Image (cartoon, rainbow, N blue to C red; front, side, top):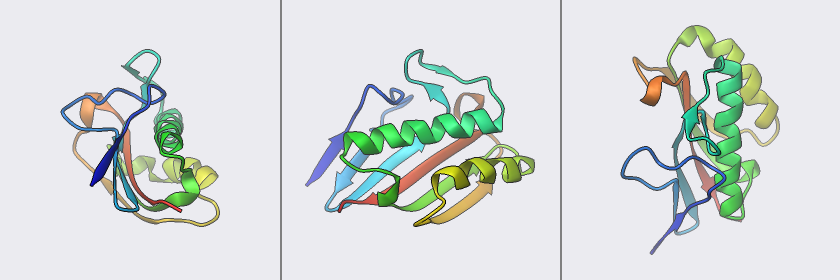
Length: 126
């Protein structure tokens, strides 16, 4: 059985998918880009600002599932420009400084809505 997770404190999905799904004791969070949930608009900020907003959205989805960043076991990070890697890592490390999850981080040609970064997570329920 699966449980759909939804919160108004994260962006509405931009396609036919859920913000997150729990199956068994595992939460699969769809990739989050820097959309401000209050406006529905993509942040026009730099990689630092967009990364903060992506993680804020992820935190709100996790909160809706009674979890937090400590539950995250794997992240997949997609950057529009690998030249942003160092700046992205600085932001990422502010949130995942202890109990670090496994991670992949790759550069991609393009992201939805012209975003600079997209982050998806897998988390385990306590």
